[in-house]
Image 1: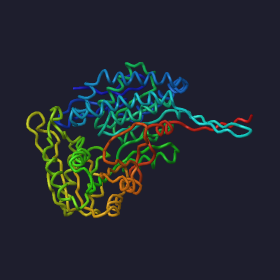
Image 2 (image 1 turned 180 degrees about the horizontal axis):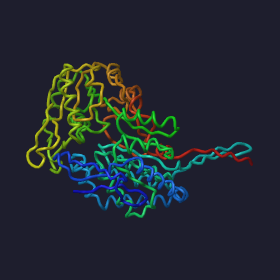
Image 3 (image 1 turned 30 degrees about the vertical axis):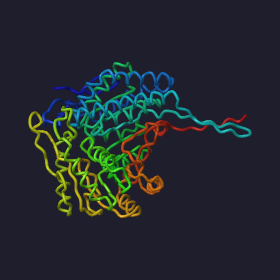
Image 4 (image 1 turned 30 degrees about the horizontal axis):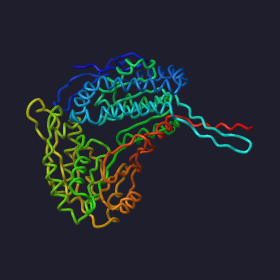
Length: 479
């Protein structure tokens, strides 16, 4: 049993109300720890600590902030295996995936924004009689709210640029997966980060999360999570004129043309469909295939889906681990049932899996593949956030564009073709914040990231993140 604690003003502490929540391992269904069920008083303590720390943190050099962030990156690296095992236990994802993706990315986030802290610059504009120069100043205390699917990956994606830009942070990790945020607090403590610069408050969204969003001294909110929650945050924050960055849901199209390299495309589309149990906002759940190769692609896709092992996240040959919670497992199973009711044919999967051994009571679902669903049906329109995909044929580029854009979301898209002209035409006409051509989830941290329509507001990554976490001020000086 572990005991996760809040990290406020450099101290590990319980919630002031004394309440706790259980932490459940998805792979076994067993409780393996507790965490604080914090309220508004804990959030206020964290904000006040951030305000005190900001008086000094905002004035230290970018080079010094870089040093602190590099120490944090080195600390995560020193505790790499502990982070990876805790991330797997907390989320149900394969340990091999946590080792390959989640923890390396958290390290990279802190290293990348460590460099940004030192190199961040602003522009100047000369006039015949004056010069204008821009100051980019930290906002103050900001709120970072991260989701359960990529806990340390996405928490570090927010915290690192906020600190690099000179802000102090109150972070609220998901109550479903709090453990690596707790480990991060320990690393920051080891690194000697000044007290109050980073505060981590655990609790549920309706209490701790709402209190953070509504606190009058929080200057900005960076949130990744569901679209419905994003709407609530926007409604609460807008009258207070807080800066908002909302990275929300996705129902991402994968568009496969007949001239693609079929074998490599099927492999990558499988990865885009089922990585992390499909619990990634960027997963391609709507797969559109040019009808010339529809049957050939479908056969290869089903064959390779059958080869995926669903099982104990600790086993090296496991491809798909446990669904994050019993509640989310039921949601996914409900959508699978709905898809069948809407006329879809299940080509593979569709059932809950009972894993033999220590994971007998865990939350597992087969990778599930539908065909024959109408583009307008709920299964094709609503975010399922699990290992469920649909296969749909199309005849030409225009139909593919219409099918892809026929959705309220617009986060990402992947296009598979050898025709460069076609690829660029499609990329220009797809309504999405990120378009991959002949690849998926190939990320450069310098590039802007975010969605359109109901997939979010604002952009993260690179200078976009540094600009979000700063206020711009123009100074005009006459000669």
